[in-house]
Amino acid sequence: MVKGGYIIITTFVSAALPFLGDFMSLTGEISTFPLTFILANHMYLVAKKQKINFLQKSWHWLNVSFFGLMAVAASIAALRLIVVHSNTYHIFVDM
Image 1 (cartoon, rainbow, N blue to C red):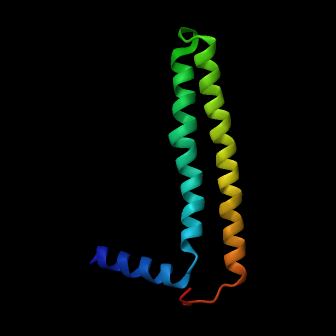
Image 2: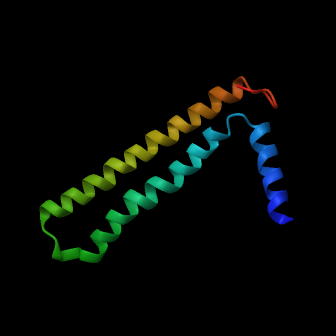
Image 3: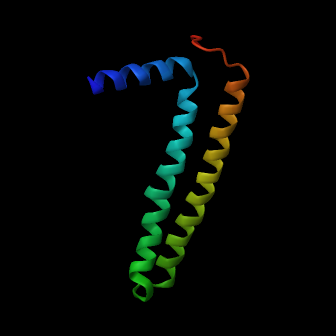
């Protein structure tokens, strides 16, 4: 009963918001980039501290910086898509 209700509600929401994929890309960007790329490299740097050489440390900081910038770019792109698609929004419209 609960599963059926959940499916009905999510189907209704996805039909009411034809640009739901844009919201999903925003939430994916907020969670995927930091948890997958940034946090793993930062945890490695914290765990190894003095045991890694300068080249390894530089590589991991480069990864943290690059994927941090990618996260910012992806969030800007996702917000832009939400704004663009919300300007032409009509409820229950088949795009």
